[in-house]
Length: 258
Length: 215
Image (cartoon, rainbow over all chains, first blue to last red; front, top):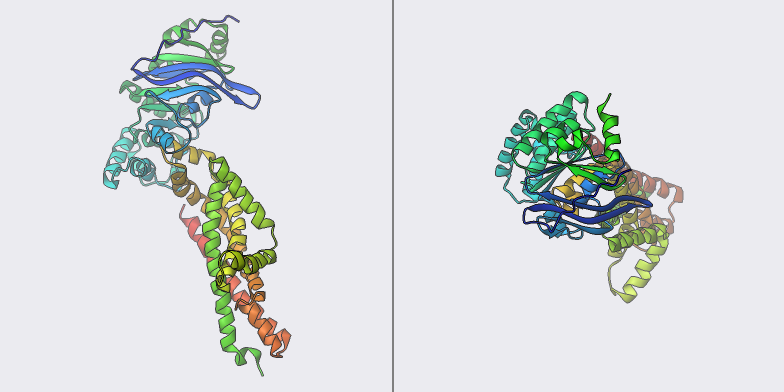
């Protein structure tokens, strides 16, 4: 296996929005994140790919501290993530998160799902929050479902609501943790299209996915992870046509040719 | 001569005593139980330890022992002259709170972790996510065991009767001393307890049905 020297990011520039510095994490004996350095610039779309169990989801979840790290630091917009508490809650409000299993609030309507954070966290008044929620729901194409409960929606619709819910907080960065992995094939595209549009609008995004088409077309940079390490980082065109590491070649050969 | 008709006023007093003690203790147990459950699932280790200690201590202590502490230790050391009803509420409420806590915690555990994660991702604090996201969804699962807990509480309040708090069990003692037939006394007392416990299970069944529709 060839070791590809990673171009280490120099001192974080003013434009660096998310900075992970030498992050390590263990799940018991499993060293799930090993010396992770990653900088995401404002407006950049970073797609994280790799075999399952490689630590991509964990990496994504450390960025808003849903997973704590054992060592190293995570900073968002220049501020290191604080301990659990009010301070962290405030920082999380600026980081949108979209989950594999949607995680819409099951006892709230679609509209309430999108207004709740605005009203309770941002202290927006109810009317303005609803207006904004309806605009966002229209934008992701589920405006007609506003008064339904999540269980009454298809998976693709639920995930689009989840995206709207995250966007309602005006996040600085959006994290997507395998947003299409729990979807039926015919619903994947409707979600990817919304994400494509977001990327075009200049949203900073970190996307963990198995959708190579999305990585190719929307990413500014592909980060390839295996066994808890970032093995390779490159522009999508270069990564898919000419991967440098054997691990990436092996991975791509398995998923692209059949 | 009829023990019930002869002593209607006394029966009423005992019945009201039991209802009041049950209601006040249930209220205290609910407030404490939910709070302690919150401690037990909180991200703050000292709070978790406190919650676990609370439940372990109170759940495993015999209720009679708690009453002994409440009636003979607390007035001596902490609050001299406190009335027996309040002491009984404290003993029953604290004891029952440990069971309520565990019922609430089991309900919290049925709510998928992702719900709390989504709430936290939106920037909600732990208290906000508990209050607005987790507990409302836990309610449905918590209602059936709570019904059992409060029925048990109703019957447990009889211990207070033995400590001179006026309730159904207490008046049974009084009437038996007055020379009435013990079987007839217990018949009417039991009936009175059944009225209370059936009311509780009825109310909770109603609540359960209401919550079923709400989703």
